Amino acid sequence: MSLNHSPETQTKLIARVPTITGRELPEWFQAIDNGPAFLRCDERANWLADEHGLTHGYAAAIVHEHERHRRNRMGFI
Image (cartoon, rainbow, N blue to C red; front, side, top):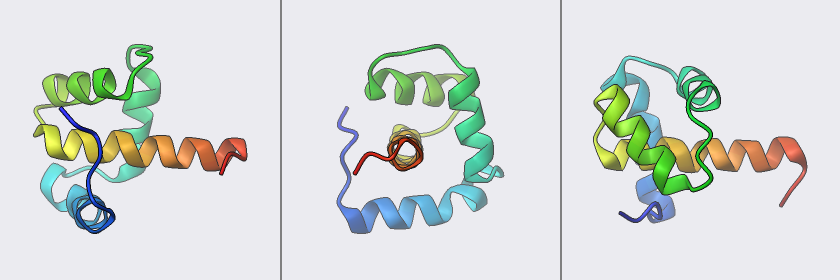
């Protein structure tokens, strides 16, 4: 499974996350932070999809956004 969506697709998926899942992004980020300590993004996305009943597209988009926010918090470009 690829975690790479086009920027346009990523933006559209992230915008629909609250409506589709009933949870805001910070809640998903907390679930990822409190979940298993996977090293790879695809493992996190698979876990998120399996554990929370998300499609892999939304799970991958959430994980990608989580990584982007994490890098920004840590000062990476």
